[in-house]
Length: 489
Image 1 (cartoon, rainbow, N blue to C red):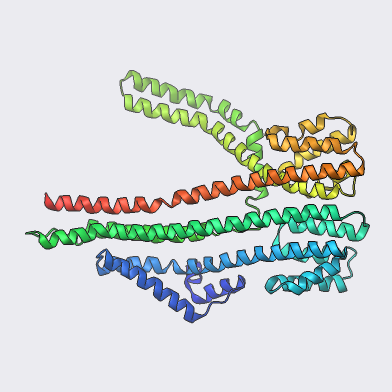
Image 2 (tube, rainbow, N blue to C red):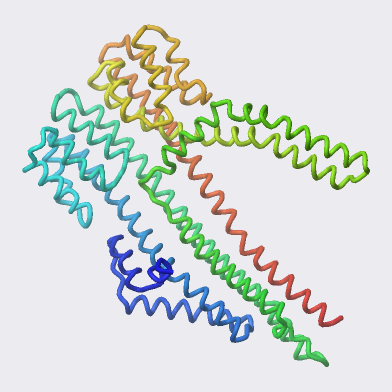
């Protein structure tokens, strides 16, 4: 009850909005509530609901307003965070390209930043100027990393700290990072625009569905006007319930799409625990072990199906057999689904790892660069990378480790990119730079493919959901037509 009161109270809403760097006045909240309530009441009048049903629908709809308000400010907050990261990455990289000094790059970014990003950079600059830690660069830049939790920011920071402390050639690697930043930012803005368009289409679809659903009510009223006896369906309990359910479905679906499709543009799509769970399912022997353990149970179920069949109870036999098929195939279907998700995680993680490796290769030999990426590599690659490092340490000239690395995933794009690494160990610096360029282009292709696939999965579900209001209309009209037929009969 306490959580419900906090959810509904204006003070609770205002507190949550303030945490998202937003500002909500009581006046604006009252205006939004009144407009939302007036719209819902208009729908209740349109569908001729009685005062009791209208009251319940109004209460349910008004309780959704706090969630909508919070979600609106959360969307703005997430978009501002991504815009901050865009500004910070590019300004810091370009400033460091001109003058390879961390403090100068930070101060350039500080000059053009605003809001939370400005406060964050202010703290980082203060730490850099007055901090007493031995690792003052990592401590200062860690303030920004902790706030935004972006892998590309961490990669940029590791690189500029390394150049500041050790020197060396940095322009080629920095160009690699800038190219990656440009591609990522461009793809994300394109995705944001697409999601915004889908939300608009869903809202239009809901509005059209509500208009269509009102046609049956209008036609019934017209028939009632010209009929010798009353055939009004709006007074029946079935109509009132159907109208209330329809309106609540439309409102609930609108709220769901607003909250569900408001995504974070910086955080990882999946947690490490989820990733490793799928990895173990995909490459473990769990499915076979479950199958072997459940053979006695499945034998009993199969025997029951045979007995029903011999007793000529076909329906029971088919039902039991269907259940048996589902139980037998589920562990293997689950393993297949886990493998699909693991490959998607690998695509995302491998491009991140390869970007870090390409940056390190500008100043380090292959083995040393690969070893430097181990601590920060994505969790799904940890086990394979450990074995890969051990194999090339034992025999640096052996080609087999490059063919076996990540082979269990059976992803052709990634295996082809790994094999490019084998040629780097024997090349001079000029040829290494050319090979790194090839590696970067290949990595960008893999990254684009992975992002497009991930976005396509999300947007395809969203586009399918555009048709759901059609089913709501079909339900409402079917009930109305059934009531009209019943009245005539």
